[in-house]
Image 1: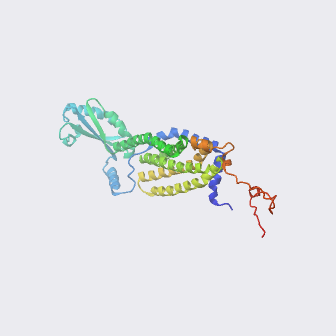
Image 2: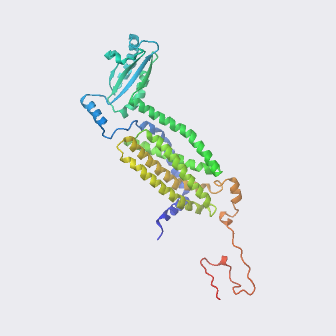
Image 3: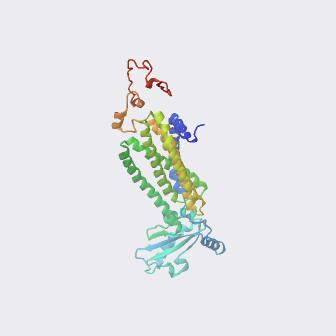
Length: 391
């Protein structure tokens, strides 16, 4: 009976045999993922700290049901360039800016100094005033309205600032997207330089970066569909990119190093299955352990914790799948000459195949009078043959 772990060797042979088909499937996934991944940020929601049925949440629900309190509020601060905040000129400019905000269907009320004449709406210096814009929608849904309010209250007469929970969550989302773009600008080139120094070959160094990038793109595309049916926090962008690049490059680095060692022992058709059997097996169990740990976050009551668990599970699954399928296919297509470096490849590559580099045992010529004269040398005997010497 075949050992169950030999399934990794069979997987390697299968991937090598259909390597072009595997590459085509992953190419289709990456092309389609490139269309859906950029839309993920529009579906993510800020906050995600609700859902634990805490005292604060119960009080907020009572305030909304019994006192008609707004579930989400945005604060708009107005500043005049040398104009007194309590003057008629200042208040007319402020009301003109707020009139466009009142046209939004989600706005329930707007309270300012001109409406209440409460001096607490004016700053102590008398140069600023603020207005409270209340919405009928929860904070996560009002997040998309914060940018719209900023555009409507912006004018030439007064300088405006928009804050509040929905605006803060929107800024966090935009900052996360910007940080990811900045990380990609620096992380990929830096990782490539380090891998070139480690492998001594540009092609071999590019393979781990390819696997890491493929894992991230597929994960972000999958999260785009998940976010359509399940609330996902903005933190998943950072988690997906960080884990995807880290695991993808780490797994590929491990497998490529093993593949280069296996090339010294046999042809590519045997090196690929052996790599999957050894390095691929370690990658599989390592990814499984990480996956089990991250799925524990799904049991937390907070949305942002569950979002991290979902994103982590998807990115680990994508990284392991890429390391066990896409990576062996790429290694089988590239072969030894493009992975071992020009100098080593020219030194090691034989004319009749890599397997012929093994040194054949020297044949001892028959000695006259030897009792075994005329027999075939040991190297020419059938495998498993045993030489018996009589005394």
